[in-house]
Length: 159
Length: 334
Image (tube, each protein chain N blue to C red):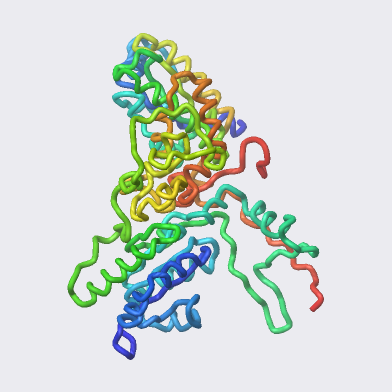
């Protein structure tokens, strides 16, 4: 088997207590299957998501991060999901600047009734990340990722 | 203790520009207090000294070492370990040693790209295409140069650090205050702050010290400061669309830049309790954008053409991500 077939991406998923966490719950009770690659973390709102969490996930070795929240206009806290939307769009640019494929970060709106939709989106994301391959950030962080300088043999220098 | 009974002081520069040394000398007549209270044991910029002299000192014999500069090569790392063994108090002095600073931005490039830029671009006259060698045989014997590391590290990524002193460079009045404190401690008139503390700076943000007027922020456009025709001298710069890093930056400088109508670029590093400086700024900037439409938000964000440079100018090496990898598109070296 090639590396791509054996590679199981690790994805950290942030869910909102009022919509997407319940959507994931619903997917569970309805026995809808989705890949086990995503580790869901419940927040009270997508607006609670500090971009630090996303960078912490990537720097700790995650291959992808999923952010989920209520549909625009339906936030339990009025407008916090819009703040998440703006942070998400800016964060993608920051990741791009560091050489990370922006597609490793995904935002999905899912209401409490959309268990099937959430499961489908997770399935799709896992395949997308699998196609991108491992990120393995700790290697870039420690500097072993950038190839060590090859020392060329000194040319003859006349004194 | 040295022969004259005074405690020893050391200052070392690793990968840095030398501005920190100038800032220390810039404390004015207080430098005489340093001389009166300390025996300068090792300070390569100010006086001649050899590494073997430091190696010969007993462990913990230097009371205070100010270490500025990042860890760029093997020599930097060896001296960091050496000074850690010989010093009682090791201070990561200035932005480079505490968080990587400008030299840390090289962590976005591969070693090959750095060498290419340094030795083979038009600004360098190098017709024979020389590059430094780690080992070179001369008639007198083999010459060794220190190995260049693939990423720049901060001092505390290499050795344990007692205190951090931020700033690029630290403001002279802050250095003077720290010197005064250490002298008081020597005379038993004060106690040292808890280990790991940031000294010579505030615990809040630059905004707290900024005299400009602040209102509810609604931003429709980000502009670069050189593109603004006239800057309102009273109003918050961020409210005027100028990307000012004040909201996430530690205070202590006295808000010099915004007072002079230039945006804060973040040289005093993250405010107290902030794990990742750049992501705090992402939060701050994104929250005040006045739009809920993805296309319009993206248009507004186009006003920040280099987000990593904007948010991590001084602390990429000390951030959560620490480095970049070759781009997935464009000029990546893979």
